[in-house]
Structures are given as C-alpha cells and as structure tokens.
Amino acid sequence: MTLKTINNNDSIGKTPDLTPREQEILNMILSGIVPKEIAFNLKISYDTVLYHQRNLYRKLEVQSIQELFVKYLKQNESLPAMSRKLKSNVTDDCYFARIEKTNDDFGSEIFFKVEDEIIAEPSKRTYAFFGHLVSKHRCYATIFMIPHPPILAAMKKIKSFSFSAMGDGSSFGVMLLTNDTMQEGEYNNYHYLFKTEKGVISEYNVNLDDLVQFTTWGKQVPFIKDNIMELGFFPHSFGDFELKVWDIKFIE
Image (cartoon, rainbow, N blue to C red):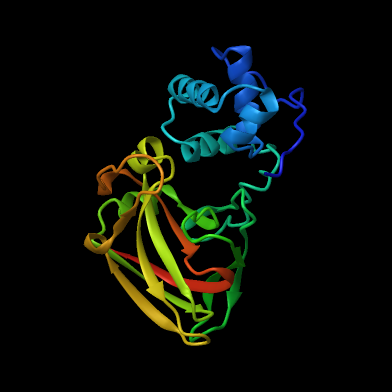
C-alpha cells in the first residue's frame, strides 16, 4: 500500500458540530485518502474510521462520499484538486460532472483522459482509460463517471443504456452503483461484462435486467433503480488494458 503523509493543519476550514477527530477525518477524506489509509495514518482501527465516517455523513446530511464531494466542491471552489483517488477533468460535459479513478493495493493502475476525438462520424466526446490490472477478482482499477443532477435524475428512470466502445480485444465491464450497494456492500456494484475486438468499433446495449451483482465484498443488496449514483467502467482481463468509450445514451 502506498501511504500518503498528511499534514492535518491543512484544513479546509472548520465545520460546525464536528468533533476534532471527525474534522480531521473529513479533511483527509476530502484530500482523497481512503479509509484504510486514514486508519493507518491515525493509528486507529478501520472500523473506528467507518464509525466516524457514518457520523460525518449524518451530521453533514449526505448519504455517500459522492454527495460529500459535491457538497464541498460547491461550497469551496478554491478546494485543491483531489489526490490520486479523485481526479476531476470533466467540467463541461453534458453528461458527467466529473470522473473518479481508483487503483488497488496490489499494483493495479488506471489512467484516463477525456477528449474530442474523431473515431467515427461525427466527432464524439471520448473517454479513454488504460493501465494494468493485477487481479480481475479485485476490480479496484475502475473509472467512475458521476452524472450531472439532471442526467442522474433521468438515469433513475431508465430501462436500458447504450454506448459505443473500441477496446484492445480483452473483456471489460460496465456497472451502475447505487446508494445501497455503496453503503451496505462497500463498493459492490451491478455490472455487465462485454468483450471487445481490437480496433473494432462496437455498440453495446445493456438492459438493467441483465445486470449482475459483483459480491466479493459485503453482503448482497437489491438493485434499486431510484438509488443510482454513478456509472463506471472497469477492465476484466489480466495485464495491460485500453478502452475508449463514447456516445453514452440513457434510454427510458
């Protein structure tokens, strides 16, 4: 695990009603530090961090880390860019407010870029991600796409969604995360696996009924469409990977 040294004096400002420890953990979360790293740095148990995190959500009236970031990004426009866990470079896309990426503790890595690229006609906003996956059973190497509020509202009504993609010939997954899967199952998700053909553009149509829950962590929870929070893509084959995705459509 790569650990980050944190100067807890670098506060984003005091938040009313938080204890000093909760304020400290809030600052670390907003710096992009994951709970296990927070526990290591503060020399407290992982369960203790989760206890404080639940209290933070309750006091700040949010239900997920996504809502927490959205709240503070709105309130603190000068808030520094998030560290390795959260990296935003989507600001004017009609669908997504920002992109988050994760790596795992075993050496998997993911990188991404967003650009206007002519792959087919016409030119489309393209999301490209690439890197190296160590273990397909720990799919931390994931790109999360956080929709703008109007798009998120529409996603809660969809029956299916589609997208165009060009991969490297290996398998990938597309997933929907909900409040329930993130809180109860610790990043469990409902996903659909798809195979790519190297250099070939394909269109994929995914019915929500075809989604399967990935349940390596935590308990299985039901898929509730009204609680959708974000869309994600992840590699499912060992080794290096590269995928370009565009023309994402949500279909009611």
